[in-house]
Length: 494
Ligand code: ADP
Image (cartoon, rainbow, N blue to C red; front, top):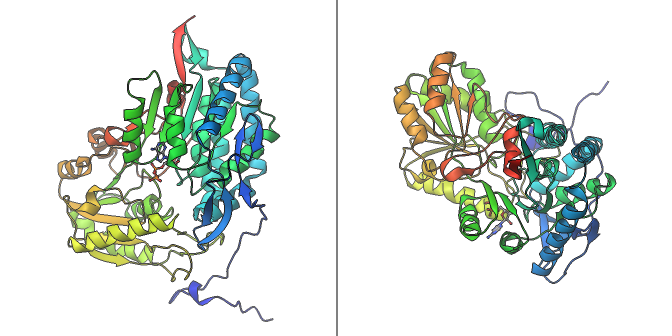
């Protein structure tokens, strides 16, 4: 029997068994052009400022997308207001919950399609979209469906009233999941929404629009307007919006905060980060290495809570880095639709340029740069191999600024106090990780960290019941858990 597999050279690893390609083949329909969801209908909107959404793994155009102008944003807000006053805020909460359950189930039913589309539009591996993004998106709708009729019990003696119309602006790193994080709690609490997806990743939001129509969500309860910063700004400034929820860069978060100041709009911001992973000498080192990989490389570092600073206790640093490099050399980079792929494509040409520029700056400031993977990335598309920057210190640009790419800066410490001081020496405060077999050390370190989230002996672990969000320049407000619903309600007297 001839069982020789013809393996492309890009997948051959020196000294390791080659893996045959394992492509995900679920077909997904991509329309030539996408408009918007307004008033329960898919509408074309203006066509004079269309933009292309590009497949990061190939650099080729996937579809054209319309830009919502101020008039269309106005129509979306008006439709959200009408749905709020006439239907959604009046509906018994248990009935609202049924719609959320229906959306959750439909996301599950169409999960492979959503995963393929997300991988194509965002560049992240199918393993991640299939096993993380899409299941978590469904889980968020299931979770908040359960809260819809229980909110009053969570605030004894008081009544939880919705805020009204929410403008929600989301980024490109977890396009469907961020939509779910935003929509599910807002809808469960009785608000209606105008959602603006990121301009480089609008496609799963538009498949979600189809799902919302299939779920027969009343028209106008969710509106989706596509476009870039100007569309987002029109939503932020619109006087008919009661709350803005934004996830994105600290820079845009600052602009939005200034625009919302002095208005009656409620605001939550989930912004950038510069997460530190503190690894003590007594940690389970192989587990910590997997945590580092998971924290920065599996998602191309496209995560605001990425563990982009590695703080190693000095005594273990050389051994840890050697083992980490060996592990990185087994990571496969390339086709996001191949089920063997660990590291996908950088989301856009602009982000690729940013990441490469930071690596250059790091080297210019004295860092030793090391890159590894099991194979060479494809010739087309935007790729950055997992990168370590060693020999850096606290004042270096790459240690201070968010890179949003697969780049890990390696630092050392001698005492817990030094580890904590270095971890806190940042303007951000979104997430950190602490690795130690000694629970008391984990807790004393975690309590001293100025960080919205601290993972103990793990990293990038998410659950809809668990709140997530930052402090300092990483923003304010929480998503997930009961904490994630409070920013969408006004507590009043019965
Ligand atoms: P990232 O660096 O993650 O792309 P951005 O903050 O640039 O983050 O973008 C996040 C989201 O904010 C996107 O949907 C983008 O279109 C939107 N956005 C960009 N500029 C503005 C703005 N001035 N006002 C409102 N939304 C904006």
